[in-house]
Every structure is written in structure tokens, then in C-alpha cells.
Amino acid sequence: MPLYCFHCYGCDADWEYLQSFEESKEEHLCGHCSEKLQKQTSIFAFTPSRWGDMTGRYGVNGYYSEALGRHVASPAVEDKLCEAKGLVRVSNYNESVITNVIDKSEDDHKEHLKDMETYNANIKKYGDDKEGKGRAIAETYSVERLQEKGLLDKSIKG
Ligand SMILES: [Zn+2]
Figure 1: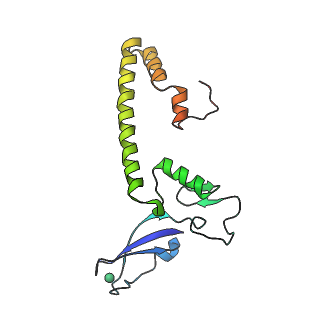
Figure 2: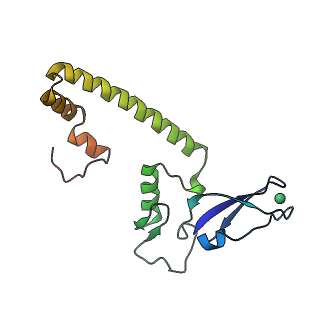
Figure 3: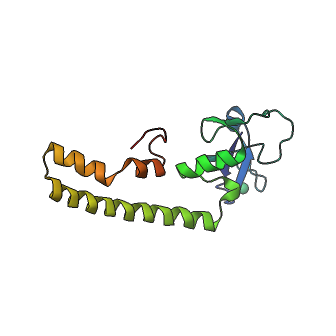
């Protein structure tokens, strides 16, 4: 079930409700001042198994992740997939995670600049015609490297 955030413009309070999409469309009143609450975006999907749902509703073979829009085997798998997409579970949403995400995007940026340097150097080496460019790309982005980054299936041979 998604976690919906509501804001009260009467007293500036924030409320979070775990509810279905249908329920989220209902009107909610602030528990402090009874003003009508304004729905904010639903930020993260809620994963019952993670939060101790023991009803077995989600089966022994995993469950459907609303955050990812696909079936996952376990919360650990879901976390890993979410992380790869830059999504952070609300319970993990602490400073170190945010710092890691920022660090990672800085690293990605540096890596990209380095790739461009390598590519341009390869163009100088092989020429900037169609063949030269193809070779420059192939040498900049090797199959091994793309597989390492998870951009290419591991069954493909370099
Ligand atoms: Zn209020």
C-alpha cells in the first residue's frame, strides 16, 4: 500500500497515511486543527513484508513491489533494485543514504567526463569517419565494462 502524505495549511502539520489509492481520494481532516488536509505526493511504496506483515498474504515466493512495478523475491532484492534506480525506501531514508546518492552522481559525472576524454583520444587515434567512431566507442565502452555497470546482459561475450 502506498504511503500518502498530507499537509495542513491551517497549522502546518504533516500527516502520513498508509492507504489504498481509493482511500487516498477521500477527504481527511487535520488531527490538530480540523482543517481539511491537502494531499501531497505519495513518495514511497510501502512493503508489508518489510514491516512485519506475517499474514502470508504475499506468499513465500516473494511479492509485487509497487515501487518497482514488478514481482520481487524478497525485501533485500527489492532494496537492491530500488537502489539501482535511485529509489530509497522511507525507512532507509537517512542522511548517509542521501550522501551516498549524491556521491554516486558525482562519481557518475566524473566517470562520464573521463569517458569523453577517452573517446576523444580514440577518435584522434582512429579518425572521425564512421569506422573510426565505431572503434572509438567500442574501446571506450567495452562489453566487460557495460556488463559491470549492469547495462548489458552477462551472457553476451566480448
Ligand atoms: Zn492542522
